[in-house]
Length: 369
Image (tube, rainbow, N blue to C red):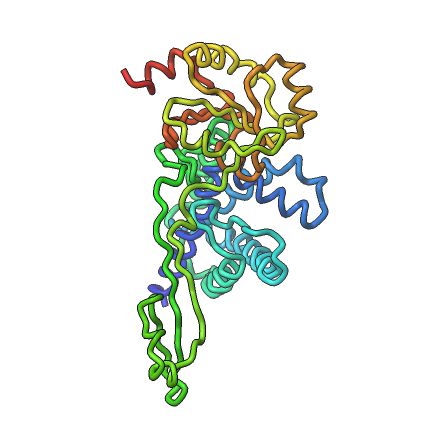
């Protein structure tokens, strides 16, 4: 039983450490998902507190994982562990049944799961958590109570500080398609494969063929076999990204942006009304020097044309504005505004508004000598 207790403790601890870390390292991504829940449950009053709740929740989750992994204060922490598991199991049940949100984000963007998979994962995890709760008095603590408390306090402070740092700048680990080094334009169109399944009328046997590599023109064969189903394998489905760039008239400029063979700067602000104005003003010198050297500098936003026009006039931002979906813009860079340097469809660098570089710094570090 001691071995079983240890295995259960370590398995649940690893899950909680991983789940807390991948969300805490990208707190703004978790904030977006939490806001989705507040909107779905019609409690927008909590939206302004999303960041604080996110950092608290991720820190608590990580802390519970550390407690289990290192056998610290388990008799007390299980009283937080069990209610948390019950709450999220119920929540993910409603997600699975009613599809409240498309992605609950239980593992952030590091591991995407369907709502049903998330619920089943929580059911499985409950099968480990309930015995741990029942065995809570059998776990022997290796440190004195004050030592355990001090260690968990240090972990909590360190983790929450890291999470705040990732919010103020950019995630330490980028799990998104637009991470530095990724190629975000579709470089090659691969062939689509069609599979057809036929069933034998006499024996009930089923066979799958790659179309058109089956005896479709054999009348004798067709007399014994009947078409049942077809499936399609499209290797291009997950290539590239879902970005679409349009001007105010709806003209599509996506290809000219993603396939630009030269250096280009993309300023991303999913909502101009909520953007950090100082960040916009700080990037203006870089914009002016870049355009003088002939490099493209555009801004992508989801704001309405009237809002864009007023923002340009009020703040003297002369660069071109284009419209894109706000969900995609939030995945491009976790900052409002944020800056991306690209060339030939490859993301070379990203900055949050607190870390915007000078044009000379960009030239020295990223431009070919």
